[in-house]
Length: 524
Image (tube, rainbow, N blue to C red):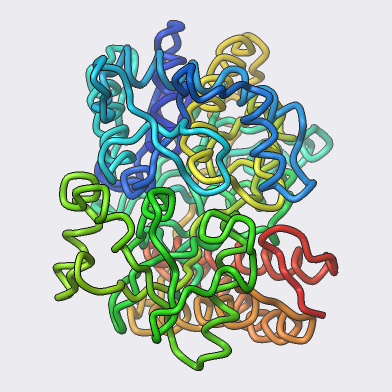
Protein backbone atom coordinates (compact mmCIF):
# COMPACT_ATOMS: atom_id res chain seq x y z
CA UNK A 1 0.00 0.00 0.00
CA UNK A 2 1.54 3.25 -1.16
CA UNK A 3 1.23 6.64 0.53
CA UNK A 4 -2.03 8.31 -0.47
CA UNK A 5 -1.89 10.50 -3.55
CA UNK A 6 -3.93 13.69 -3.79
CA UNK A 7 -6.05 12.52 -6.72
CA UNK A 8 -6.50 9.03 -8.12
CA UNK A 9 -7.96 9.14 -11.64
CA UNK A 10 -9.43 5.84 -12.86
CA UNK A 11 -9.57 5.87 -16.65
CA UNK A 12 -7.37 7.57 -19.22
CA UNK A 13 -9.67 8.78 -22.00
CA UNK A 14 -10.53 12.41 -22.58
CA UNK A 15 -12.24 12.81 -19.20
CA UNK A 16 -9.50 11.08 -17.19
CA UNK A 17 -6.56 12.72 -18.95
CA UNK A 18 -8.19 16.15 -18.81
CA UNK A 19 -8.85 15.74 -15.09
CA UNK A 20 -5.30 14.55 -14.43
CA UNK A 21 -3.77 17.46 -16.34
CA UNK A 22 -5.99 20.06 -14.68
CA UNK A 23 -5.33 18.76 -11.17
CA UNK A 24 -1.60 18.49 -11.86
CA UNK A 25 -1.53 22.05 -13.19
CA UNK A 26 -3.09 23.14 -9.88
CA UNK A 27 -0.23 21.49 -7.98
CA UNK A 28 -1.85 18.23 -6.91
CA UNK A 29 -0.08 14.88 -7.04
CA UNK A 30 -1.98 12.64 -9.45
CA UNK A 31 -2.00 8.92 -10.20
CA UNK A 32 -3.63 8.15 -13.56
CA UNK A 33 -4.71 4.52 -14.03
CA UNK A 34 -5.26 3.07 -17.51
CA UNK A 35 -6.93 -0.30 -18.01
CA UNK A 36 -4.90 -0.90 -21.16
CA UNK A 37 -1.82 0.76 -22.56
CA UNK A 38 -2.18 4.55 -22.39
CA UNK A 39 -4.15 5.59 -25.46
CA UNK A 40 -6.19 2.39 -25.73
CA UNK A 41 -9.48 4.06 -24.86
CA UNK A 42 -12.97 4.57 -26.20
CA UNK A 43 -11.95 8.16 -26.93
CA UNK A 44 -9.52 6.86 -29.54
CA UNK A 45 -12.41 5.20 -31.38
CA UNK A 46 -14.43 8.42 -31.74
CA UNK A 47 -14.53 9.45 -35.39
CA UNK A 48 -16.91 12.35 -35.86
CA UNK A 49 -15.71 15.30 -33.84
CA UNK A 50 -16.12 17.63 -30.88
CA UNK A 51 -18.14 20.82 -30.54
CA UNK A 52 -15.96 23.90 -30.93
CA UNK A 53 -16.45 27.57 -31.74
CA UNK A 54 -18.35 28.12 -34.98
CA UNK A 55 -17.25 30.90 -37.36
CA UNK A 56 -19.21 34.17 -37.01
CA UNK A 57 -21.05 33.73 -40.30
CA UNK A 58 -22.76 30.61 -38.91
CA UNK A 59 -24.72 32.74 -36.44
CA UNK A 60 -24.12 30.22 -33.68
CA UNK A 61 -24.59 31.05 -30.01
CA UNK A 62 -24.78 29.34 -26.61
CA UNK A 63 -28.57 29.66 -26.82
CA UNK A 64 -28.68 27.89 -30.19
CA UNK A 65 -26.36 25.10 -29.02
CA UNK A 66 -28.38 24.68 -25.83
CA UNK A 67 -31.57 24.45 -27.89
CA UNK A 68 -30.08 21.70 -30.06
CA UNK A 69 -28.97 19.70 -27.00
CA UNK A 70 -32.37 20.09 -25.31
CA UNK A 71 -34.19 19.08 -28.47
CA UNK A 72 -32.19 15.85 -28.80
CA UNK A 73 -32.56 15.13 -25.07
CA UNK A 74 -36.34 14.72 -25.39
CA UNK A 75 -37.30 16.88 -22.42
CA UNK A 76 -35.08 15.16 -19.85
CA UNK A 77 -31.97 17.35 -19.97
CA UNK A 78 -30.68 19.07 -16.84
CA UNK A 79 -30.94 22.70 -17.87
CA UNK A 80 -28.04 23.91 -15.73
CA UNK A 81 -25.70 21.33 -17.25
CA UNK A 82 -26.79 22.22 -20.77
CA UNK A 83 -26.25 25.94 -20.16
CA UNK A 84 -22.84 25.31 -18.59
CA UNK A 85 -21.58 23.26 -21.51
CA UNK A 86 -23.05 25.62 -24.12
CA UNK A 87 -21.33 28.63 -22.55
CA UNK A 88 -17.98 27.16 -21.46
CA UNK A 89 -17.43 24.04 -23.55
CA UNK A 90 -16.64 25.38 -27.04
CA UNK A 91 -14.16 27.93 -25.68
CA UNK A 92 -12.42 25.25 -23.61
CA UNK A 93 -12.20 22.98 -26.65
CA UNK A 94 -10.44 25.68 -28.63
CA UNK A 95 -8.17 27.01 -25.87
CA UNK A 96 -7.12 23.68 -24.35
CA UNK A 97 -7.21 21.13 -27.15
CA UNK A 98 -6.17 23.30 -30.10
CA UNK A 99 -4.17 26.18 -28.63
CA UNK A 100 -2.45 24.37 -25.74
CA UNK A 101 -2.18 20.74 -26.84
CA UNK A 102 -2.04 21.36 -30.57
CA UNK A 103 -4.62 18.74 -31.58
CA UNK A 104 -4.37 18.64 -35.41
CA UNK A 105 -7.93 19.64 -36.27
CA UNK A 106 -8.66 20.19 -39.96
CA UNK A 107 -8.01 23.87 -40.72
CA UNK A 108 -9.46 26.42 -43.11
CA UNK A 109 -7.62 28.94 -45.29
CA UNK A 110 -7.03 31.17 -42.26
CA UNK A 111 -5.24 28.32 -40.42
CA UNK A 112 -8.00 27.99 -37.82
CA UNK A 113 -10.25 24.95 -37.19
CA UNK A 114 -12.70 24.35 -40.02
CA UNK A 115 -15.95 23.09 -38.44
CA UNK A 116 -18.42 20.80 -40.17
CA UNK A 117 -22.11 19.95 -39.77
CA UNK A 118 -23.61 16.92 -38.04
CA UNK A 119 -27.07 15.51 -37.50
CA UNK A 120 -29.44 17.67 -35.42
CA UNK A 121 -26.96 20.59 -35.17
CA UNK A 122 -28.20 24.00 -36.33
CA UNK A 123 -24.72 25.29 -37.21
CA UNK A 124 -21.40 24.04 -38.53
CA UNK A 125 -19.66 23.84 -35.17
CA UNK A 126 -17.96 20.42 -35.14
CA UNK A 127 -14.15 20.39 -35.01
CA UNK A 128 -12.69 17.28 -36.61
CA UNK A 129 -9.40 15.70 -37.59
CA UNK A 130 -10.41 13.88 -40.77
CA UNK A 131 -12.54 10.99 -39.47
CA UNK A 132 -10.24 10.08 -36.58
CA UNK A 133 -10.86 13.01 -34.24
CA UNK A 134 -10.87 10.95 -31.06
CA UNK A 135 -7.52 9.37 -31.89
CA UNK A 136 -5.98 12.78 -32.56
CA UNK A 137 -7.27 14.12 -29.23
CA UNK A 138 -6.22 11.02 -27.29
CA UNK A 139 -2.72 11.07 -28.77
CA UNK A 140 -2.22 14.69 -27.69
CA UNK A 141 -3.61 14.03 -24.21
CA UNK A 142 -1.51 10.90 -23.69
CA UNK A 143 1.66 12.76 -24.62
CA UNK A 144 0.79 15.61 -22.25
CA UNK A 145 0.11 13.40 -19.22
CA UNK A 146 3.32 11.43 -19.77
CA UNK A 147 5.32 14.65 -19.73
CA UNK A 148 3.69 16.25 -16.68
CA UNK A 149 5.91 15.99 -13.58
CA UNK A 150 2.95 15.80 -11.19
CA UNK A 151 1.32 12.82 -12.91
CA UNK A 152 2.30 9.18 -12.40
CA UNK A 153 0.79 6.92 -15.07
CA UNK A 154 -0.02 3.29 -14.23
CA UNK A 155 -1.01 1.14 -17.20
CA UNK A 156 -2.73 -2.23 -17.63
CA UNK A 157 -4.42 -2.24 -14.22
CA UNK A 158 -8.04 -3.28 -13.64
CA UNK A 159 -10.44 -1.69 -11.19
CA UNK A 160 -11.63 -4.25 -8.64
CA UNK A 161 -13.52 -2.06 -6.17
CA UNK A 162 -13.53 1.41 -4.68
CA UNK A 163 -12.01 1.55 -1.20
CA UNK A 164 -14.70 2.81 1.14
CA UNK A 165 -15.18 3.30 4.81
CA UNK A 166 -16.82 1.64 6.55
CA UNK A 167 -17.10 -1.23 4.01
CA UNK A 168 -13.39 -2.06 3.96
CA UNK A 169 -12.54 -1.17 7.56
CA UNK A 170 -11.53 -3.72 10.19
CA UNK A 171 -13.50 -2.19 13.07
CA UNK A 172 -17.23 -3.05 13.07
CA UNK A 173 -17.89 0.21 14.92
CA UNK A 174 -17.19 2.15 11.72
CA UNK A 175 -20.52 0.91 10.33
CA UNK A 176 -22.25 3.95 11.83
CA UNK A 177 -20.15 6.39 9.81
CA UNK A 178 -21.19 7.80 6.42
CA UNK A 179 -19.69 6.11 3.38
CA UNK A 180 -16.54 7.78 2.06
CA UNK A 181 -14.24 6.83 -0.81
CA UNK A 182 -10.49 6.61 -0.17
CA UNK A 183 -9.10 5.19 -3.42
CA UNK A 184 -9.42 1.85 -5.18
CA UNK A 185 -8.30 -1.76 -5.21
CA UNK A 186 -6.45 -2.41 -8.47
CA UNK A 187 -5.65 -5.78 -10.04
CA UNK A 188 -2.48 -6.34 -12.04
CA UNK A 189 -3.04 -9.18 -14.55
CA UNK A 190 0.71 -9.52 -15.05
CA UNK A 191 1.36 -10.45 -11.40
CA UNK A 192 -2.06 -11.62 -10.23
CA UNK A 193 -1.82 -9.22 -7.29
CA UNK A 194 -4.32 -6.69 -5.92
CA UNK A 195 -2.97 -3.35 -4.69
CA UNK A 196 -4.72 -0.78 -2.50
CA UNK A 197 -4.24 2.63 -4.13
CA UNK A 198 -5.10 5.19 -1.46
CA UNK A 199 -6.11 8.72 -2.43
CA UNK A 200 -7.51 11.82 -0.77
CA UNK A 201 -9.84 12.20 -3.71
CA UNK A 202 -10.85 9.71 -6.43
CA UNK A 203 -12.25 10.51 -9.88
CA UNK A 204 -14.01 7.87 -11.97
CA UNK A 205 -13.49 8.25 -15.72
CA UNK A 206 -13.80 4.62 -16.77
CA UNK A 207 -16.05 5.12 -19.79
CA UNK A 208 -19.11 3.25 -20.95
CA UNK A 209 -20.59 -0.20 -21.36
CA UNK A 210 -21.27 -0.73 -25.06
CA UNK A 211 -19.68 -4.19 -25.04
CA UNK A 212 -22.74 -5.44 -23.13
CA UNK A 213 -24.59 -5.42 -26.47
CA UNK A 214 -24.14 -7.87 -29.33
CA UNK A 215 -23.70 -5.04 -31.86
CA UNK A 216 -21.59 -2.15 -30.59
CA UNK A 217 -19.23 0.53 -31.81
CA UNK A 218 -17.26 0.32 -28.55
CA UNK A 219 -14.03 -1.59 -27.93
CA UNK A 220 -14.11 -4.87 -25.93
CA UNK A 221 -12.93 -3.07 -22.79
CA UNK A 222 -16.15 -1.02 -22.50
CA UNK A 223 -17.65 -3.29 -19.84
CA UNK A 224 -19.01 -0.79 -17.29
CA UNK A 225 -16.31 -1.38 -14.67
CA UNK A 226 -16.60 2.04 -13.03
CA UNK A 227 -20.39 2.04 -13.00
CA UNK A 228 -20.46 -1.40 -11.36
CA UNK A 229 -17.87 -0.38 -8.76
CA UNK A 230 -19.82 2.79 -7.93
CA UNK A 231 -23.00 0.74 -7.58
CA UNK A 232 -21.31 -1.67 -5.18
CA UNK A 233 -20.08 1.33 -3.17
CA UNK A 234 -23.67 2.66 -2.93
CA UNK A 235 -23.28 5.73 -5.16
CA UNK A 236 -26.47 7.11 -6.65
CA UNK A 237 -26.96 5.94 -10.26
CA UNK A 238 -29.62 7.26 -12.65
CA UNK A 239 -31.05 6.99 -16.19
CA UNK A 240 -29.72 3.49 -16.89
CA UNK A 241 -32.50 2.77 -19.39
CA UNK A 242 -31.11 5.34 -21.83
CA UNK A 243 -28.63 3.47 -24.03
CA UNK A 244 -28.00 5.27 -27.31
CA UNK A 245 -27.59 3.32 -30.53
CA UNK A 246 -25.55 4.78 -33.35
CA UNK A 247 -27.53 4.41 -36.58
CA UNK A 248 -24.65 3.44 -38.84
CA UNK A 249 -22.12 0.75 -38.02
CA UNK A 250 -20.52 -1.23 -40.84
CA UNK A 251 -22.29 -4.58 -41.11
CA UNK A 252 -20.08 -7.53 -42.03
CA UNK A 253 -21.39 -10.88 -40.72
CA UNK A 254 -19.09 -12.42 -38.13
CA UNK A 255 -16.98 -9.27 -37.74
CA UNK A 256 -16.96 -6.54 -35.04
CA UNK A 257 -19.02 -3.48 -35.93
CA UNK A 258 -17.06 -0.45 -37.17
CA UNK A 259 -18.52 3.00 -36.57
CA UNK A 260 -19.35 5.00 -39.69
CA UNK A 261 -19.16 8.59 -38.55
CA UNK A 262 -22.17 10.90 -38.27
CA UNK A 263 -20.29 13.33 -40.49
CA UNK A 264 -21.08 11.16 -43.52
CA UNK A 265 -24.76 11.96 -43.15
CA UNK A 266 -23.86 15.52 -42.20
CA UNK A 267 -22.23 15.82 -45.62
CA UNK A 268 -25.23 14.36 -47.42
CA UNK A 269 -25.09 10.53 -47.35
CA UNK A 270 -28.43 8.76 -47.85
CA UNK A 271 -29.93 5.77 -46.07
CA UNK A 272 -31.42 3.35 -48.60
CA UNK A 273 -32.93 -0.12 -48.66
CA UNK A 274 -31.76 -3.05 -50.75
CA UNK A 275 -33.59 -1.62 -53.76
CA UNK A 276 -31.70 1.66 -53.44
CA UNK A 277 -34.76 3.60 -52.22
CA UNK A 278 -34.43 6.29 -49.55
CA UNK A 279 -36.74 5.57 -46.63
CA UNK A 280 -36.20 8.27 -43.99
CA UNK A 281 -38.99 10.42 -45.46
CA UNK A 282 -41.45 7.80 -44.13
CA UNK A 283 -40.23 8.27 -40.56
CA UNK A 284 -38.87 11.83 -40.30
CA UNK A 285 -39.80 13.84 -43.41
CA UNK A 286 -38.43 17.12 -42.06
CA UNK A 287 -34.89 16.17 -41.05
CA UNK A 288 -34.49 12.89 -42.98
CA UNK A 289 -31.01 11.40 -42.36
CA UNK A 290 -30.12 14.34 -40.09
CA UNK A 291 -32.74 13.50 -37.47
CA UNK A 292 -31.53 12.66 -33.92
CA UNK A 293 -29.84 9.30 -33.50
CA UNK A 294 -32.69 7.62 -31.66
CA UNK A 295 -35.10 8.51 -34.48
CA UNK A 296 -32.76 7.30 -37.23
CA UNK A 297 -31.90 4.09 -35.36
CA UNK A 298 -35.57 3.20 -34.88
CA UNK A 299 -36.29 3.97 -38.53
CA UNK A 300 -33.54 1.59 -39.61
CA UNK A 301 -34.77 -1.06 -37.16
CA UNK A 302 -38.31 -0.77 -38.54
CA UNK A 303 -37.07 -0.87 -42.13
CA UNK A 304 -35.10 -4.03 -41.37
CA UNK A 305 -38.18 -5.57 -39.75
CA UNK A 306 -40.29 -4.77 -42.81
CA UNK A 307 -37.77 -6.18 -45.27
CA UNK A 308 -36.54 -9.12 -43.21
CA UNK A 309 -32.99 -8.07 -44.07
CA UNK A 310 -30.19 -7.94 -41.47
CA UNK A 311 -29.11 -4.45 -42.57
CA UNK A 312 -29.84 -1.37 -44.66
CA UNK A 313 -27.34 0.65 -46.71
CA UNK A 314 -25.57 4.00 -46.55
CA UNK A 315 -25.11 5.59 -49.97
CA UNK A 316 -22.09 7.92 -50.15
CA UNK A 317 -22.65 9.00 -53.76
CA UNK A 318 -24.05 12.41 -52.70
CA UNK A 319 -20.93 12.96 -50.56
CA UNK A 320 -18.53 11.86 -53.30
CA UNK A 321 -20.14 14.39 -55.62
CA UNK A 322 -18.63 17.29 -53.66
CA UNK A 323 -15.90 15.81 -51.42
CA UNK A 324 -12.86 13.60 -51.93
CA UNK A 325 -13.78 10.59 -49.79
CA UNK A 326 -10.23 9.35 -49.24
CA UNK A 327 -8.98 12.67 -47.91
CA UNK A 328 -11.99 13.50 -45.74
CA UNK A 329 -12.88 10.01 -44.48
CA UNK A 330 -9.73 7.87 -44.61
CA UNK A 331 -10.72 5.70 -41.63
CA UNK A 332 -14.10 4.85 -43.13
CA UNK A 333 -12.62 4.16 -46.55
CA UNK A 334 -9.90 1.92 -45.12
CA UNK A 335 -12.41 -0.07 -43.03
CA UNK A 336 -14.67 -0.60 -46.03
CA UNK A 337 -11.89 -1.58 -48.42
CA UNK A 338 -10.56 -4.05 -45.86
CA UNK A 339 -13.88 -5.87 -46.33
CA UNK A 340 -13.78 -5.63 -50.12
CA UNK A 341 -16.24 -2.72 -50.30
CA UNK A 342 -15.81 0.41 -52.41
CA UNK A 343 -18.02 3.18 -50.95
CA UNK A 344 -17.47 5.34 -54.02
CA UNK A 345 -19.13 2.70 -56.20
CA UNK A 346 -21.63 0.90 -53.99
CA UNK A 347 -23.77 1.60 -50.90
CA UNK A 348 -22.30 0.33 -47.61
CA UNK A 349 -24.22 -2.24 -45.49
CA UNK A 350 -25.01 -0.73 -42.08
CA UNK A 351 -26.83 -1.65 -38.89
CA UNK A 352 -27.49 0.29 -35.66
CA UNK A 353 -25.15 -0.56 -32.77
CA UNK A 354 -24.92 0.28 -29.07
CA UNK A 355 -22.85 3.42 -28.91
CA UNK A 356 -23.23 5.53 -25.77
CA UNK A 357 -24.62 5.22 -22.24
CA UNK A 358 -26.63 8.33 -21.36
CA UNK A 359 -27.08 7.31 -17.72
CA UNK A 360 -24.43 6.79 -15.09
CA UNK A 361 -23.18 7.86 -11.68
CA UNK A 362 -25.10 11.01 -10.81
CA UNK A 363 -22.85 14.06 -10.48
CA UNK A 364 -23.40 17.77 -9.89
CA UNK A 365 -22.02 20.60 -12.00
CA UNK A 366 -18.59 20.09 -10.37
CA UNK A 367 -18.46 16.33 -10.86
CA UNK A 368 -19.24 15.39 -7.26
CA UNK A 369 -21.07 12.11 -6.74
CA UNK A 370 -23.32 11.23 -3.80
CA UNK A 371 -20.30 9.73 -1.98
CA UNK A 372 -17.80 12.08 -0.29
CA UNK A 373 -14.37 11.71 -1.84
CA UNK A 374 -15.66 10.41 -5.19
CA UNK A 375 -16.02 12.41 -8.40
CA UNK A 376 -16.90 11.24 -11.90
CA UNK A 377 -16.60 12.54 -15.45
CA UNK A 378 -17.19 11.28 -18.97
CA UNK A 379 -19.47 8.44 -20.00
CA UNK A 380 -19.48 6.76 -16.58
CA UNK A 381 -21.06 9.90 -15.13
CA UNK A 382 -24.55 11.30 -15.59
CA UNK A 383 -24.42 15.09 -15.60
CA UNK A 384 -27.93 15.33 -17.02
CA UNK A 385 -26.57 16.99 -20.15
CA UNK A 386 -27.86 14.34 -22.55
CA UNK A 387 -31.26 13.72 -21.03
CA UNK A 388 -32.91 10.79 -22.79
CA UNK A 389 -30.77 10.96 -25.93
CA UNK A 390 -27.36 12.44 -26.69
CA UNK A 391 -26.75 15.03 -29.40
CA UNK A 392 -23.90 14.05 -31.74
CA UNK A 393 -20.39 15.23 -30.78
CA UNK A 394 -21.30 16.28 -27.23
CA UNK A 395 -19.64 13.35 -25.46
CA UNK A 396 -16.02 14.37 -25.97
CA UNK A 397 -16.80 17.94 -24.92
CA UNK A 398 -18.67 16.77 -21.83
CA UNK A 399 -15.72 14.58 -20.83
CA UNK A 400 -13.33 17.50 -21.30
CA UNK A 401 -15.42 20.04 -19.38
CA UNK A 402 -16.40 17.80 -16.45
CA UNK A 403 -12.89 16.38 -16.31
CA UNK A 404 -11.69 19.93 -15.71
CA UNK A 405 -14.46 20.83 -13.27
CA UNK A 406 -14.19 17.58 -11.32
CA UNK A 407 -10.44 18.04 -10.95
CA UNK A 408 -10.85 21.64 -9.82
CA UNK A 409 -13.43 20.66 -7.20
CA UNK A 410 -11.31 17.75 -5.98
CA UNK A 411 -8.24 19.95 -5.53
CA UNK A 412 -10.26 22.66 -3.78
CA UNK A 413 -11.60 20.08 -1.34
CA UNK A 414 -8.38 18.17 -0.59
CA UNK A 415 -8.24 19.60 2.93
CA UNK A 416 -11.62 18.06 3.69
CA UNK A 417 -10.33 14.51 3.13
CA UNK A 418 -10.75 12.20 6.13
CA UNK A 419 -8.29 9.41 5.44
CA UNK A 420 -8.37 6.25 7.56
CA UNK A 421 -5.15 4.89 8.94
CA UNK A 422 -3.93 2.11 6.60
CA UNK A 423 -3.97 -0.29 9.55
CA UNK A 424 -7.73 0.23 9.82
CA UNK A 425 -8.31 -1.23 6.35
CA UNK A 426 -8.83 -4.94 5.87
CA UNK A 427 -6.30 -6.45 3.45
CA UNK A 428 -7.51 -7.88 0.17
CA UNK A 429 -8.05 -11.63 0.48
CA UNK A 430 -7.72 -14.11 -2.36
CA UNK A 431 -9.40 -17.55 -2.20
CA UNK A 432 -7.12 -20.10 -0.54
CA UNK A 433 -7.81 -22.75 -3.19
CA UNK A 434 -9.12 -20.81 -6.18
CA UNK A 435 -11.10 -22.51 -8.89
CA UNK A 436 -9.50 -22.34 -12.34
CA UNK A 437 -10.94 -19.72 -14.68
CA UNK A 438 -12.38 -21.43 -17.75
CA UNK A 439 -12.29 -19.02 -20.74
CA UNK A 440 -15.01 -21.01 -22.49
CA UNK A 441 -17.44 -20.46 -19.62
CA UNK A 442 -16.67 -16.74 -19.53
CA UNK A 443 -17.23 -16.48 -23.29
CA UNK A 444 -20.51 -18.38 -22.94
CA UNK A 445 -21.72 -16.05 -20.17
CA UNK A 446 -20.77 -12.98 -22.21
CA UNK A 447 -22.65 -14.39 -25.18
CA UNK A 448 -25.78 -14.74 -23.08
CA UNK A 449 -25.52 -11.21 -21.66
CA UNK A 450 -24.87 -9.58 -25.03
CA UNK A 451 -27.55 -11.42 -26.99
CA UNK A 452 -30.12 -10.94 -24.21
CA UNK A 453 -29.63 -7.18 -24.02
CA UNK A 454 -29.59 -6.82 -27.81
CA UNK A 455 -32.78 -8.83 -28.32
CA UNK A 456 -34.80 -7.72 -25.29
CA UNK A 457 -33.39 -4.35 -24.16
CA UNK A 458 -32.24 -2.89 -27.46
CA UNK A 459 -33.65 -0.29 -29.84
CA UNK A 460 -37.30 -1.33 -29.38
CA UNK A 461 -38.51 -2.75 -26.05
CA UNK A 462 -41.61 -4.25 -24.45
CA UNK A 463 -42.43 -5.14 -20.87
CA UNK A 464 -42.62 -8.84 -21.74
CA UNK A 465 -39.19 -8.82 -23.38
CA UNK A 466 -37.65 -6.97 -20.45
CA UNK A 467 -39.20 -9.38 -17.92
CA UNK A 468 -37.85 -12.31 -19.92
CA UNK A 469 -34.38 -10.76 -19.95
CA UNK A 470 -34.49 -10.06 -16.22
CA UNK A 471 -35.41 -13.67 -15.48
CA UNK A 472 -32.73 -15.03 -17.80
CA UNK A 473 -29.98 -12.94 -16.22
CA UNK A 474 -31.12 -13.38 -12.60
CA UNK A 475 -29.65 -16.84 -12.24
CA UNK A 476 -26.59 -15.92 -14.29
CA UNK A 477 -25.85 -13.11 -11.85
CA UNK A 478 -25.77 -15.51 -8.90
CA UNK A 479 -23.57 -17.93 -10.80
CA UNK A 480 -21.07 -15.23 -11.80
CA UNK A 481 -20.97 -13.75 -8.28
CA UNK A 482 -20.29 -17.17 -6.76
CA UNK A 483 -17.57 -17.82 -9.32
CA UNK A 484 -16.01 -14.41 -8.60
CA UNK A 485 -15.63 -15.24 -4.91
CA UNK A 486 -14.25 -18.74 -5.48
CA UNK A 487 -12.02 -18.35 -8.55
CA UNK A 488 -8.68 -16.68 -9.01
CA UNK A 489 -8.93 -13.11 -10.25
CA UNK A 490 -8.44 -12.29 -13.91
CA UNK A 491 -9.28 -9.32 -16.09
CA UNK A 492 -11.86 -11.43 -17.90
CA UNK A 493 -13.64 -12.37 -14.67
CA UNK A 494 -13.64 -8.80 -13.37
CA UNK A 495 -15.14 -7.55 -16.63
CA UNK A 496 -17.79 -10.28 -16.61
CA UNK A 497 -18.80 -9.34 -13.06
CA UNK A 498 -19.08 -5.69 -14.10
CA UNK A 499 -21.06 -6.66 -17.18
CA UNK A 500 -23.75 -8.65 -15.39
CA UNK A 501 -24.22 -5.91 -12.78
CA UNK A 502 -24.61 -3.22 -15.44
CA UNK A 503 -26.93 -5.40 -17.54
CA UNK A 504 -29.26 -5.76 -14.58
CA UNK A 505 -29.13 -2.02 -13.89
CA UNK A 506 -30.25 -1.36 -17.48
CA UNK A 507 -33.04 -3.94 -17.31
CA UNK A 508 -34.40 -2.81 -13.95
CA UNK A 509 -34.45 0.83 -15.03
CA UNK A 510 -36.12 -0.03 -18.35
CA UNK A 511 -38.79 -2.09 -16.59
CA UNK A 512 -39.55 0.64 -14.07
CA UNK A 513 -40.03 3.26 -16.79
CA UNK A 514 -43.11 2.59 -18.96
CA UNK A 515 -42.75 5.89 -20.84
CA UNK A 516 -41.12 5.99 -24.26
CA UNK A 517 -38.66 8.85 -24.36
CA UNK A 518 -35.50 9.39 -26.37
CA UNK A 519 -33.51 6.20 -26.78
CA UNK A 520 -35.75 4.26 -24.34
CA UNK A 521 -38.55 3.19 -26.68
CA UNK A 522 -41.31 0.86 -25.52
CA UNK A 523 -43.93 -0.20 -28.04
CA UNK A 524 -46.30 -1.29 -25.26
